[in-house]
Length: 487
Image (cartoon, rainbow, N blue to C red; front, side, top):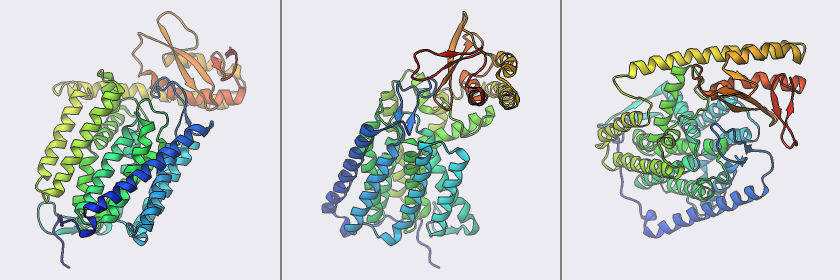
């Protein structure tokens, strides 16, 4: 069977002439308008559901903010697609599997925004949608040789490789969605990059699809810039990631798969790098990979003195530069691939040092040993917290649980009463109530406060649900004139 060369950059077809660029601009504007209008509607009608509550640790916004922004992007995307079908810009027979599975992935995230589903449930939903898309023929089957002619037929490896790509990208986008405008802006840059890939490979339907998504993101970004009035939520983040992943696979079916995927991997360099850093530090510390923390690249930039706006502009600039580097692979027919690899390696090493993930290369062994020591502390904390949760379920009365709780809190470096050299830390319960604890400002023998707070939360929730009190601790009830206290 004849094999196409690995990098094909045909001349743009006649129907992608200059006059048609105005059509693409029109679709971009329509999608942006619909997204902006829908976002305004959500902001005006938002209720108590789907609200992201501040916690004074990772979530530093001053008041609850809606997490339903993904709905505006999804609506703009659907309307844009319907218009593109009418304009004969998109062939429905080719695109309906992509739209169906994007709808499923969006639904998983959106339902989680309304009521937490749990990481495992969301992962099962993503894998299910990816399997459906694979069964409908959108898959990575052949990898072309990036350095010359020839290709590799993946055979049975096609399924796991396709699943990894389709599941990894949405979660990568979701992991970086920790600062106002970051994931939305990255999605906009990468969508435009993918539109350019479609233009170079003579696929106007890919251009239409990516221009519509870019417009939707641009319209939403108006309200997502710092300080954000609305958040993407898991629905929006998963939709952006899965859309980029699925469209890149579909667009590669008419050309070199390795070329299209490499462009996307380079363009997604910052979120991929951030995810790798997160996986490594969480693995060393012994915490779940999907456990949120405040040590992502944007958090580190803010600790270095950047404002939110400055950090956002810096990351946008890097994303834009990497998008150009990725496109250079396609434009040079693969000759720029070694350069792109070198750029990513230098970026990774420089970022690790500049952001403080690695203090010094010579002292890296001591840093790893310190991280492993911290891992043992976290295991100690989690073991005590798990035991407390079981005790809260087993104890016959609040008084019996109180005798156990006091001693265990002390072992975890926490207490129920203020004192000299202590600071207050709040644990938010499932119904919105807050348990106020105190920890020493000088005591740093234990892991950081966030780890202890997250670990202790389940047992406090159990006690509150059983006895409507947490013995020995102060519980602040929302919309009440004073806090209720029990001893």
